[in-house]
Image (cartoon, rainbow, N blue to C red; front, side):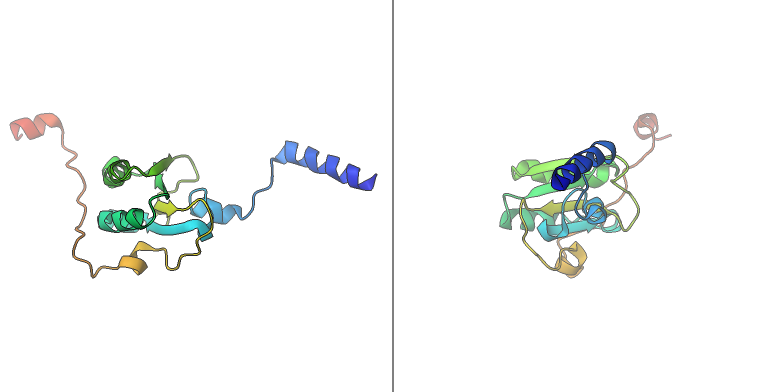
Length: 154
C-alpha cells in the first residue's frame, strides 16, 4: 500500500508542478536538447561576427540526419543563410522563440544536434573550425534606411 500512495503523490505533484525534467539548465542552454547530442554550436557573438555557412554545410554533409535548431529571437539577416542552407540540404530544422531563446552574446544562435547521444568534442564552431579558414567573411548588418532614401538617394 505505501508504494501505491507514493505513486499517487507523484502523480499529484506532476499535475501541480509538471513533469520533472532531466538537466533543465543544460536543455535551456542547448535550445531544448542535451549536450551529448550536439555536433556543432554557434553562439550569438560568433554569428554576429562571421558567416559560418561553410562549417554548417560541412557538418550537415557529415551528418545528414541531424536537426538544426535556430534561435528565432535573432534578426532575420543573421539566420536567413542557415535556414536556406538547411532547406537546400533537405535537413530538418526548427526555429525556437520565446523566453528560453536568449540573445546575449554567450547564448546559442544555432545548434546542430542528433536524435541520440554522439558525445562530440569540441562542439563550439570557433574551437572546431577556427578563424584560420578563409572561406568565411564578416556579416554586415542590412542597410536600415527607408526604401525612399535608397531609391532617391536622399
